[in-house]
Image (cartoon, rainbow, N blue to C red):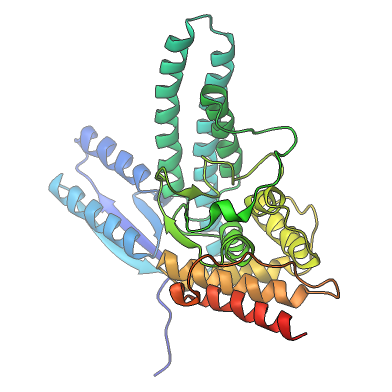
Length: 353
């Protein structure tokens, strides 16, 4: 029997009682909350994932309870460029929401610098507003299925606001002194769900050169002992025109021909500005999207991304050779993932040269 791939999209078609404006408003708000976009009147679309199926099934139940009718079905776009058009709709919707968050953050940032209140009163009100904007940003991230470009700008504004209120992070100017990998051993690195190109490459960099036994988690709210990366908080995220991979490489003074080549690819794919225009970027982007489509489990997705970027970096090694990876602080068998094995295999090969 030939393998038939699952349809890429889920569609919710519904009809509500014409006289119930409250039902229409409630349904519209719920569809916005789960990230659905309108394909036609009363027909909404989501990616075909387990979570999205659950969301649409709940929506169907709610619509029926409101006296309406609803059907959930799966489909593929068969018209030319149909899939690209749907992805563009999702990105435009999230782009508007990220920019709305950024506008609110920038307004608060200007206000915090000009209002003449007592320091404690000003900081208390600003901190409450910051928490609300973080939650708003996280809600958009949760339904950003296709990495809308404006996410980085909104995250940078949030980081600037956090610096202004709490003084926790530098967001402009020169990088601080280089960090030692030793201080980051035996730590859990956390990021947002559904890793993409920047987070896959960053995780490879972390495990290859900072801590070969690094573990990763996925959350919207890092714990006090966690090390966040590519999130709106912490120092390892977008910084100005640099993506997270570039920031990590600079903060830990990681330099090699292979890292530089990978950095250019990741930058162009993540920042979408074609600054370097490396020939490999399109293929790497396709591979990342393929992994995201194939693997629903975030941990498995990140591990496969680590392996992929390890292979990519290995192909770029020149006569200069790779820099020495970080030394493990625990027993070699404490981490058995494929990424850990790649790091140790490369180290052994270097020793035999």
